[in-house]
Length: 52
Image (cartoon, rainbow, N blue to C red; front, side, top):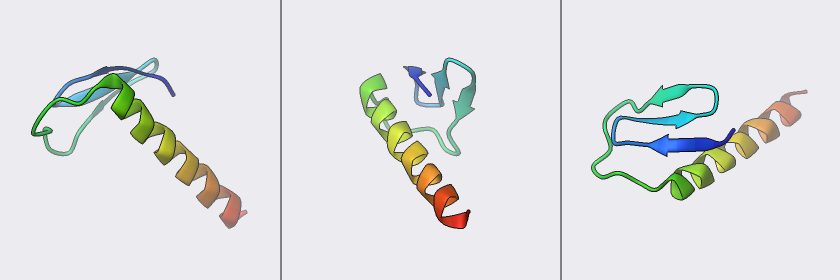
């Protein structure tokens, strides 16, 4: 999933706009948000693999 935009209220990917539970204190870069998304996707994949 590729992050294309980040604001204090949400981040946007190619497919969807995801709102944060609470607005961020400060805006983060697209690159930093991409790193977070990549790690989360990896964790989800690992958890799915363990479950199967």
